[in-house]
Length: 376
Image (cartoon, rainbow, N blue to C red; front, side, top):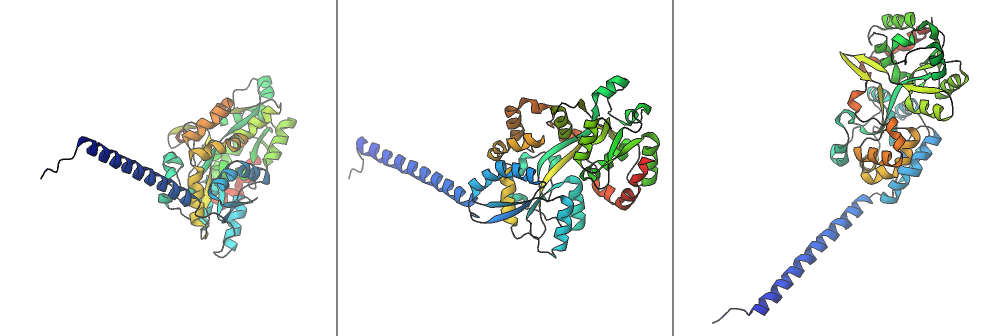
């Protein structure tokens, strides 16, 4: 019996098999896409509470990333004006039932939050985009949202008049011509906990011997006084009462410059453990609140924030605050949108100083009670 099939039959069979293969591939691909879309929107209709900073800052988040995230996932974000200190107090008072799910925390207050037990831990497997973040910025409680550079802001007109060098370190801060014209943060200012450890290092001191460090600083720099808020600092610099603010956010200094105030930003040389750093880095983090019942939603939000699509949507936010995004694709998007951002973008976060905040917090009481001594 001859079972050999004619060539035309075999050709048709091959075509049918090929068509079936293509159909299976298309079906599988469509199924994957459908499954992905369904997975992304599995929490659609639910909401999370986000404790940010000021209303103006939250509005920028809402109009950029917030809109993108809600359109993509169907999850609504409730934006709460707050501060890290308020969040720590609120979560502790909640008795394990917090009314916020995710919060913005700079690295200094994150260390406080961990110490106070108000910070949760995320599941790294739920945030695969974390691999896009530099190792030095990765945290266990969430993700970095953006990083800021802290240095010194000075009045260029006064420094030129007095023929002073750029105020990169205490050698210039302590110049007699600047006596009574240098401003530091008060212990109630948001910048204080962020910058005080770096100021201590700049004075040649350390975190544990508080009295000696305060003595070193006060004996060298004759301060004008303290600022409680960025507004105080801006007003004093604008009026010309203060010629130098130590530990000033680069974005604030650039904003003053754009307003026509004769100021410039000075990089802050910080020596610690045998290494010299250029400026203080302050990463702002999206942090999971301990015991939040919306942990999975928060992890989805964090992973989405680190996506390339969210990076593009968030460009107006990064530019508004002069904050460096946590991924290279987001940095590229910011620079493409605003080439002048190269002035403040942090290209290598490992070259900036990130204090050992837990070591500083171990002596926090002494630091807060003795800080006023630098005004002697």
